[in-house]
Image 1 (tube, rainbow, N blue to C red):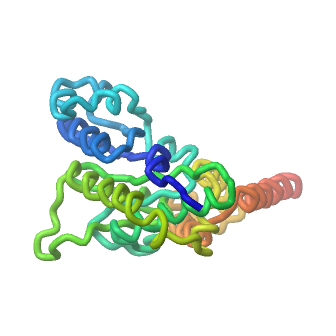
Image 2: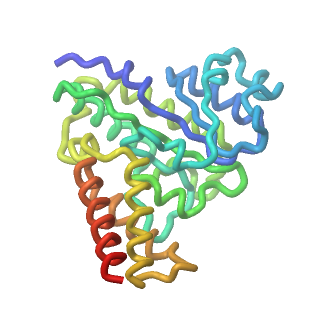
Length: 265
């Protein structure tokens, strides 16, 4: 089956979190356009009109369509709406982190996911790559909102790529995987099939909010410090790759428990 994986690049979203420099946004847009990606989301940027800043436009070097169509949202949860699988970029390993992939492994996995969808005659999934702020990167809670942790295999003695460089490496890896792995190296695997059925991350986030309410009501977590327990639950669900039906079921469980608790209380 001859599948044109280049077309799948249109279903990949680049998300920039708390970006502070307009020039970096312009350079990211240029990197994306060079590799055939178009969908850019920016969460809580330093400037509300980040994509219209002169430095952003100048350093985009003509990739104005990416800037003009960029979506600015309040937080990562909003940027992940509609996304089935997200990769968080970080040079640091984390406790309770999702499974780790190199940029090359991530690119191959994503192309395998698109190929699995095409072979099953399903709509292509939405995949996101999430990049943190220039100085601080992603915080732990943001990493835990993704199903994969992704790292670029740079020189361990000097692992310091700037934001646009990291995006360029990842988008190049994706394009190369689409160009060269279309027929032989990309295979449908059980992992691809699980990811293909993965729930929209926005729905998963909503379900976790319901579970937090339930656990607080049951006195299983401290209302003032629920973060650690919820981070562990998020890590668990990220590993299991819940489907939409499973998310709906678990949300129903929490709703039933809360209803019974209020009735009996």
